[in-house]
Image 1 (cartoon, rainbow, N blue to C red):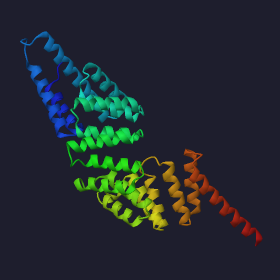
Image 2: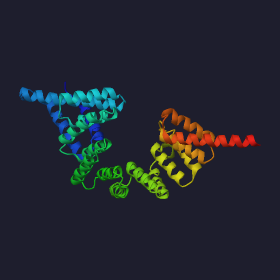
Image 3: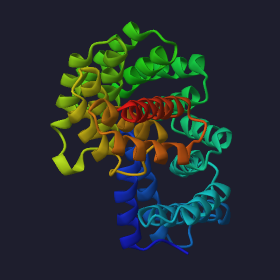
Image 4: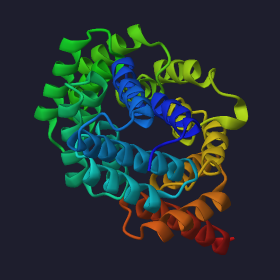
Length: 323
């Protein structure tokens, strides 16, 4: 079965969206041009060539179905289509990438890394894929291999922002905050708007007891979003910076907004409770702690804060009893 013209056009669009570099897009487009040619070639080709062409075409059809499933949020179907595409044509670079990402989401990290490693080989070392592979290595705690991938990507393209960001991530992972700052700033010199880098910078400034610098960094990032579309992690960092500045009511307001932008983490609920308590809102602080401890009953900071609130309440009750 051969792809129709509409399917081919759609695949070009999807591959352009998902391809991490112009080189990858050129490669994918060349493959599609080849497929278009196959669709119109008559019986002059050998049986062996026709068989190979049919495998490539079928694999691309399966990848297209996988992209369609992704667009509709059908992750299981997408995973099956990409797996079938790889089985049909093991050198389908894009299928390996998408399959790797789906496996990563399912926390099948070793398998995901294997497929991304294969995609890097098939791409001839596409620097964007190399960086993504480094990110996966770092998430697994392998800082050495992550750094190697960053260096490899920079060797291919010294102006690649994500490669310098990966170097910053490695330095931060190692606890070298000053070096991490330098790497992140180098990344921003090539791409001024990068939420991951700007959030990392703000977190480091806050850890260094520089909350004003953290807040100015976050304000620059926030200017790129409408007020009602601010991401949860940005609101969290802004709230933490404001709390560090002693602006507890403002911090509580932003942290409360953050809980409405997706499922709140235990950490977020704890920081909200702390900000509310510092601003004098004990009632809502208790409610936030109840939610935090419902998620993670052994969360140390939340239990400590609950003990502090209980102790304050006991002192108040005792004081009222004396009068």
